[in-house]
Image (cartoon, rainbow, N blue to C red; front, side, top):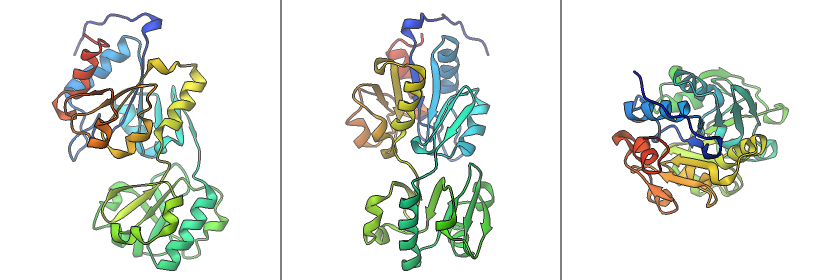
Length: 270
């Protein structure tokens, strides 16, 4: 596939940060529409900076990015960045994790943790993976390691936490108010950094980017914190209303050429 490309002037360079799920990738198989693939190619060839901005762990985003030739990332909900393939990933706050897992143990809520940038979650028994098996295909998602004597206080670094608890249980746990987490399913939460703007600002600082040149695309509530008024913020047509309300522009649905439509609207591609 070949496209006619016009190289931009450096002063016109934009720094794009795309959410993955529901923005770049659509459907159960998380496919990138051809129009989006075409747009990413054109943006890159014109000299723009392309990055994803995702809550996914770096290891879970890496394969996706390699497939589409993306070498820059904001991962782990803002705790991880990658510039030209070089990764810098911060763990979660240790005190926060100790506090909430003590509460989970007291309430007998199944939990697990990731101790490195790898698709492995550690837990004390089979209760957590057995509960999660009804929600996700465990073997395709994470490898389970059972450690009966797992002591959260003796763990040096924790990169993700997972808990099997429903919305009603969530309301009763006061300590969750001090925890950064997201809920993608009614029966479990992922304890993770929830502010992608932290990672974007880190890249901005390293690369000396001006706010006016940053463009973010998103669709869900976990994108709200990266929709900063000083940046150009674009919500997909399939986005939640809370995100649309604070966006500078609402484009078409992700599976209806929304990325391409917005980029043409602003003149970033022809």
